[in-house]
Image 1 (spheres, helix red, strand yellow):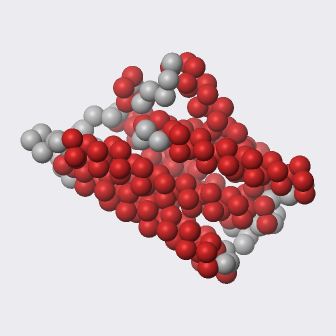
Image 2 (tube, rainbow, N blue to C red; image 1 turned 90 degrees about the horizontal axis):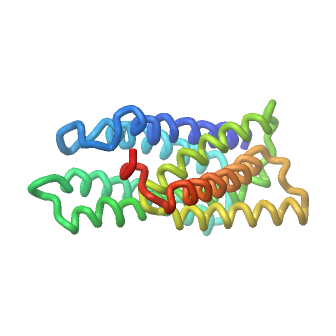
Length: 227
């Protein structure tokens, strides 16, 4: 597949533009009536989620569907969880306002919904990262582009992990990717692929940013609590 790397770069850019940047502009307060809730929620559901799903399916059609059935099931399960989690989060978030806000609505919105959608998101990314060393692509300036896109993606996913209260999940996945790709490099020197370089840098940058955040803030405090 010749365009896996550019698909990852697109996910990186769209995640920042449509998932993180709107909160920097509009804040975390509800600014629209239910079910829209706020402009960041609109960008999330109307742009980020559909774009990400389209890219995931593009990668499936171009690469995953020719692989073993177990890989295909895991990959597609990740997409399903990602979409389902978004639906749960969106619906519960719309209910979590007076007079309908209840502990159940909060649980489905902030805990269960976030857990499911980010679990699906990470399953897909983990699947791609495991295959990435075998995908050879010719990319001009791959190291510079990998560095820039990986650090943008690390910042965006780190912010999402903190606000979504799923930091542990992201740390575990980044450690798995880092260990896997480091092993391949030291054992077989298999890091020619720009996609593998992207995942390696992303895992490193994400861990560094989360560690810095922890020591500066005194914990993994949600950005909405201090912004």
